[in-house]
Image 1 (cartoon, rainbow, N blue to C red):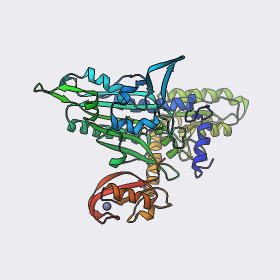
Image 2 (image 1 turned 90 degrees about the vertical axis):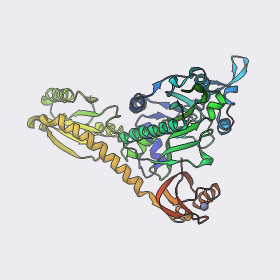
Image 3 (image 1 turned 90 degrees about the horizontal axis):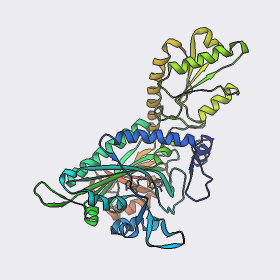
Image 4 (image 1 turned 120 degrees about the vertical axis):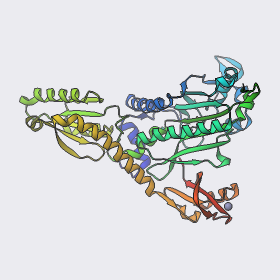
Length: 463
Ligand code: 5CA
Ligand code: ZN
């Protein structure tokens, strides 16, 4: 496996490291292996605990009646080509066709309209972790572009004012920052161009990361919905003066692309490298059997290590295999720390500690093991996060002419007046997409129309 051949590496890794099986016989549908699902659950638990501070978890149905899905015209224009339909129950044709949720606005908001009565009901902040279905026509890929998104964590909020909803988008940005920082996954945050925002939104903020092959991956989006959906679904509240007002809404979500990013930015030619917080096994303990006389003492020493590290997820590997084969197997699955115990360690009252991210090994006295591992767990996250960040930075270039991006890998920042015409021209000349825009402190000139501007466009070739 060579990470430099990213596409092959990614596909092989999914199987070798037991993340996903891609052999399910429906295009765009994949199977989580138990190991992959374990990693998925741990990763989503991190996000859950961040959301749980001020959101409540709920669950809305998978099936959406056609008349609700079609209510919001801009929204449906964005999704109509991507909807899977249920049209029959047994052999009976349904009176009302039912859509498989492509996202849940039109499942949730009719209920919001019933639930929300007064300003006392606001803010409302809910989330759900569900599967969603999109009939994607672009090339489908496991974890990256699925037709069944199995792990869609979508939050939906309602507020009194547009300003309150804007503040909520800022809370969401902070939350996703914390989530991705904890995984050591670097990102750029930008505002999507107006012609490419979420269908029905006032504006969309996107998180993008850079994959090893120089393509970008959108790993989260946050939408300010204004009162557009409230007007369509009649979601009103009585304000403090007794007046009826439309609520202002936001929604934001991530998918298993967070796992795609996590494994892609950190992995290497040997396989996965996992941040300790989400690794299903954090420390693997391997006895190095040499002579039968030592066997029992070695196993006891391994058990001591497991007890000493009881606050971590440890596994003692007693399989009847050579140590080298065991190292290889656990390295492939990204276990951050390996503790080896051999006859020499026994004699010295120490153990050997190896870290997955750098491959370094050192001898650690037993009395220092627990403190050593605690420090190492922090160092590993800092190291892999730093490397990933440095990689993205090295592939992010500020350019003056859109042609400079042509045929190049990575992300590009370029001045842009913000007009759709110039934006489209930038895309054509650079052969890349505008992921989004952000403001810079210094003034520059749009390379297309020469207008002065503070706006920079972020260009890349996205997945
Ligand atoms: N209702 C809003 C907020 S949850 C919504 O649907 N936004 S979205 O369309 O932008 O999707 C949220 C995130 O899901 C995206 O940022 C992207 O990371 C991910 N995503 C979108 N489509 C797919 C897909 N086909 N496969 C995997 N992930 C996807
Ligand atoms: Zn311009």
